[in-house]
Image 1: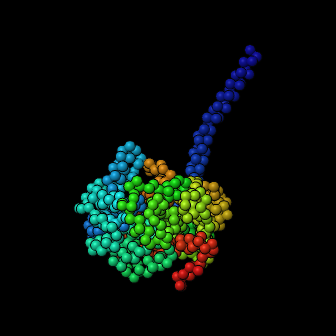
Image 2 (image 1 turned 60 degrees about the horizontal axis):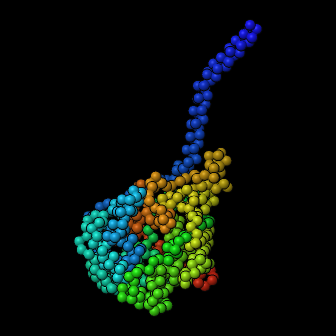
Image 3 (image 1 turned 90 degrees about the horizontal axis):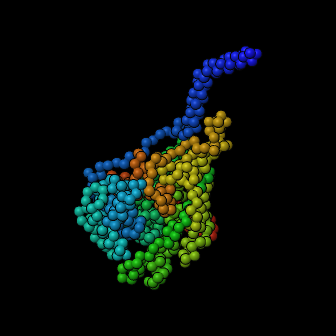
Length: 531
């Protein structure tokens, strides 16, 4: 019986403790709720911190209604891989492409290529002329002009095939031309087209040499035609948002920019297939090489050079004009840097020992002393490691592409610098953690697509495959063609007009000349010379 009171007291004690504990539950619950709210508020402050600082500007929507505007007749000169994409941007695809794209969409619901094409705006144009030195390409262009599987109204008739570009330019019915030949033909055709009164869309690089760039610039200014260079990244929504952030000074003083290209595939190194139907009868090799400084007879090497022309400086502009040009133009769009004062470059052929003379590893440095800015570019064709582009300011860094989390075409991330003066108080209070982004821009992040190949991922990452407008996936090439046609109809200024095209051309040629001469190249803006 002596143990009973002790057991009773213990029971009473436990009961009292339970009652006390229960009594505190509401208080503890309130504490947890308040803590959760505080954590949520802190998270909100840390997430997209710059959103409160950015003066929001809505992106332009895709404008419809061109069907009521002036009808334009266009011709294409050069209907290879890029020419085909440009013409698709205008609304014309080969039956083989639409069949393949629709079949891919049927097999894979994530593949949006066909849907993106068919949802394009009808640009109210007809493809009436095709010129190509390879019969297969020319026939494909004609087939595309008459393909009824397209956005908008059906074509009225097939395009006419021309053997020489001057014959196409002589057609008074043609209002404008798309030039998608190899680079060594760009200057001749652009100048002749402008003098013939044809508006010009020219694929990048603008010219093969610096002197040609000056000649093209002078002719376009003299004739007054509408000129658009083929940098479709000018249509990428993220670039305009990035420009807005930088203009408002949210990165602080910017003294260093890093631009990169990494590709690691034969296709990415321009080792393209040689068409089995290519021979001396179906391909006009003598005409192809006519503007090139060095001539070779038709044969196996000629076929390699025709289909893999980017590997030789006789016809192309190398890593500078083909790849660096995209990143430079995007940076010029974002920061308005213009032509550098100095350029220097190095590189070599380290991986692809296939007879090319264009380097597969190349680095360039552009100096802007008046802007207190250095731009670094590095490229390799033997590594697929994603590095992205970085605009580095005193207060924050903007990462576009690569492993940043910005991901691809649709966006970028901004991360504060640990030694920032603009964000010093926020850093000290813990509102900003320099390990995590303070702003993320990714309008297409919720959309999933079927981009799987290394090539497709590369183009998507660079903003060359698709972009978004008000959440809608759009081909930037289509938007770029539309911008050019709009400028023709409305007497407007294309986004990649002759002035900014000249900036890109001179900067790239400066870097290329540095590689050739093994020294730093200087731009003389007064005399428009490289010294």
